Length: 241
Image (cartoon, rainbow, N blue to C red):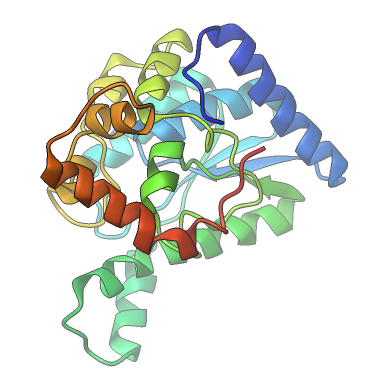
């Protein structure tokens, strides 16, 4: 059952120990994760650094991405002290799109990006004997707001049982940059894209509805319920601890 975080230090310790235990039980040496410049990956970076000081690798993987995203990712890396690598996948993406049939379905194109990033993370994971850490949260899990075999392609998901609104507070507790905390959540799939605009409701509304703390108007309630229902096939991929 999902609960609001009451003791952030205790919850952080639990997550750090979970990451350590998962890696050690698999006989691996460290962790690798995508660093987007957003809140969720920033929290994951901070947790992974606590778990593996010298073997926590964040990878920036731009694909026609806004330069600001890379700047923000580098800010997170500097703040947390993680190891950092950049792998520009723009040419890879372009070559792939030239190889497949044309389509008018935009999301089938946009979802190629997180799937290329997943492949990149596993390349480095295997070469370094690392474990891939995902950054999906429970709010995304509940609505199916993630890409199958993309950002859901990871070995462990340490924050998948945490609500997005709680992660804002955890980020503050971890001392992450205010710029990252205040940034509008975005999957970075296309220019100007934000999670809340695409979903049709705010994370505050979504989390309040999940926790039965607020009542939404019928339109938003039906939208959330529909997303939860039609995306159940995706939810078998992400698992809580």
